[in-house]
Image (cartoon, rainbow over all chains, first blue to last red; front, side, top):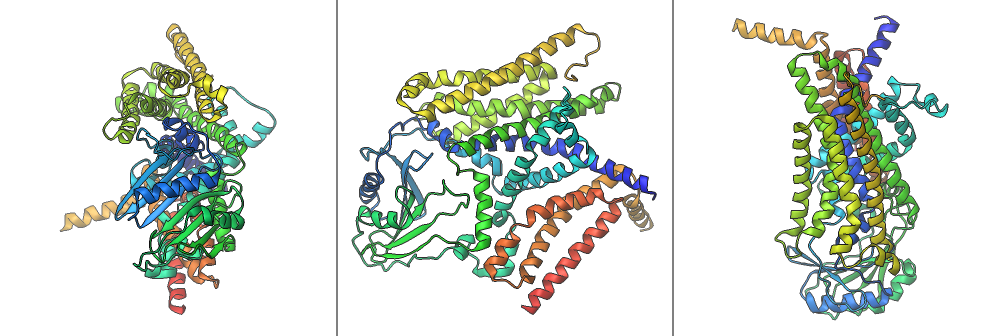
Length: 513
Length: 107
């Protein structure tokens, strides 16, 4: 084969990979990137959705004391207690205990220790779960893994087929069409997309590729935690022993791990002579997402040991995790991730739209099967892009509209998400494409802009009282939703305008500009 | 019997043909499934070959799969023909398996 021929084949297969792979995985990737972008603000969204809790936190000593007392009262026979302390962006005080196979969880008022009545909800954690397993367990995790691997390949193949993108970008040759929108946002978000996709794929290593630990450790493998962390846990002695008050151990733990830096406490076998209390440090001021920890004897309160240094490669691996979850850097890093995430979503969406725009004229004159396929691709584009935005906002709405005592409430919210998404797909199949775009974007805009009003009507703290009280988490979610709603409204309006124009013109070539 | 053989032959001929659709399907299968096989075997071979403490080897090889899998995607599509892509991939898988086996036996 001659040199030019080889080159032509190479370009053609790269473009095939990018175009068709991009189409099929693009639908999935948009959903993953959009819910992943929302996951950046998981604690805030959870806080917004758990509108039972609007109490400011107090000192760690007081909260540990309240949680300790409550656990002694509620779960004297449990074999594991856990306390999640409010720390940084995380506002809730939770107690969790394991009794046999059951795990129970309660939210406490950090001021009084009273159990807070909360409507059952998955909160922002649903977005986190969805973006890494599509809410469908192992199968979903595989699909997300495959899509992520494809995403990395698509970045390279995209650059391979259009090497001019960088010079176009930096010489400000910005055109106003869908291809340019795709390539410009692509160049802009390239570092972010590489970072987030590579780290996301890497941190699922132990779940998706269990072979390496298998060949190294064989059957003695008990998960990554067992080989990297010093283990101070002990088997229960089955002899009673009075658990030391946690507040007495707390100062020792704070001396070891840093004052006001504790985020989690675990007490194994409380009430046993061999019980162990372990304190975990928060990771919100470090990129290496591994908690330093200190363990204490549950009866005497003496320190059994602590760990704050890790193996070199463990540190690298966990810093990739830290770079993915973006818990460090206060609010600056999460906002940066949020904006970069939205831009990446736009990159994917523009690519999907460009696929259909480029082929519109080609399919006009072709046979019925090809036209049907084209129509289905267009509908899937709409459902994948604007449909999921509607579904996500509907999920937040359902949180406020379903009554607190609704049966299986948390699941019902998720059913609303999937139900609305399916409805959007049906809608996109039935309506002419431009109408469907405009209507769905309009609906999403309405739901987002309406969110502060809904919150004011149904929640304990509306937008303005929240601002007055300095509750910037509630206000922040409201305002961000409203801002996104305005952007969506502008998009809907522009599509509607194009639709109107296209009906007046004989040859519809809208969306092309 | 004869018919069976002929249809087998036809299938083989079709698989080896240069038709674009079949080429692409072969590339996709190689990328998704063959790619996964290499993504499993290569880090395993690395983990067994590296003369490091187990924890080091484990967490170092954890960094590789997210590079290998996308690279195989590109590799399968960059090859001039799907047949050559498959051949190269199978050689790579075989090589890694042999290395892993030798390392496992030596250990």
